[in-house]
Length: 416
Image: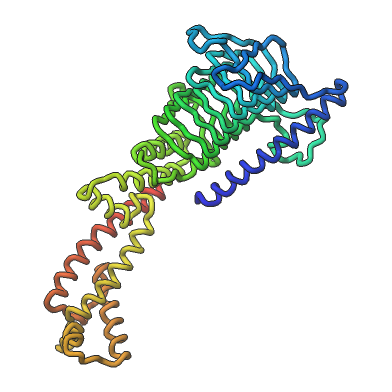
C-alpha cells in the first residue's frame, strides 16, 4: 500500500523543486508585462560571520522579487527579550538567503512564492501569525500545465534551514520544507494541505488543530517529542495524508512507535479505518524491536499469527507452514498405516533408503492427515506413534488458537 504513496511523494518533491524556479520566472515576466519592467534586487550584508550579520530593518510595505542575503532580521541583539513585531508587510518572490531571524513576530503578512534558504533562528525564535505562504496564480499568467496544482500556486519553500518557529493560523498550503531542522516548534490552527516535509529532523514539534489533508512526510531523518493535538476537533486527515516509514535503525524506537500511533489515531478520528490499521500495524512492529526477550515471545506470536490483528492472511500462511512441518515430523518420528509402522529416522540411521515414489506417497499421506487433523475434518487412516503424538497435540493446540485469531481478525476488519 505504501510503496505507491512513497514514490508519488518523492515525485512531488522533485516536481516542486523543479517547478518553483519556472513559476518564479513566469511571475516575474507577468509583473513586468503589467507593471512595467521589474528588476530583481539584491540586499546583501557584509561578509561577516553569522553572529555579526548586519541588521536588516523591514521598512517597506512590500518587497518584490528581492534577494535578502547575509542579514539579521528582528531585534539587533539576540539578548533582548522583547519581540519585534512586523505587521501587514508583503513579500512576493523574495528569497531570504543565509539570514538569521531574532525574536521576531510576523503578523498578517504575505510571503507569496518566497524561499527561505540556509536560514536560522537559533538560539531565538520566529513567529508567523495569520500569514499567507501561498497564492492562487492569476489566470493571465501563462501556465504550462494548467491542471497541475504546483503551477496553479505560487508556493513557498523552506530549504536547508534550522528553525525554532511557531505558525499560528497561517495558510501553509503547498509549502515545501526540505532538509530542515525544526526544533521546539508549534503548528497551530493552520491550513497545511498539500505540504511536504522532505528529509527533515523533528525535535519537539506540536501540531494542533490543523488541516493536514494531502500532507506528506518523507525521508524523516530524526524524530523526538512529536505530538498531534485535536482540542477543537478540527484536525483533518484524508486518504492522501502520508507518513513514510521511518528508518528503524535510529535509537529512539519508542518515539517512532508513538508517532505511528498518533497518525493511526488521527486516521481513526477521520473515519479512515484501513489507514488506521496500517499505522497501528507499523507501530506494533517498531515496538517489537524494543521489547526484552520474554516480552518478545507473545509479541512475535501475535505478529506471525495475525499481524497484530491487521493481517488475517498471516494466519493462513503460518497454518500452511505448521501443516507441512508436522507432516515431515510425522514421517521422521513415525506413523502407522494398516498395521505397518514407518519411521524415516530409522531409515536414516540404517542407511536403508526407500524409493522416491514411496517417499512421495508417504509424504502426501502424512500431509493429508496433517491438513485434516489441523482443521478437525475428515477420517484418518493414519495412527501416530511415539513422539509424533506430541507433535500432533502441539499442532492441534496451535490450530485452535490460530484459527480463532484468524476468524476474529477477519470479522474485525470486515466490520470496519
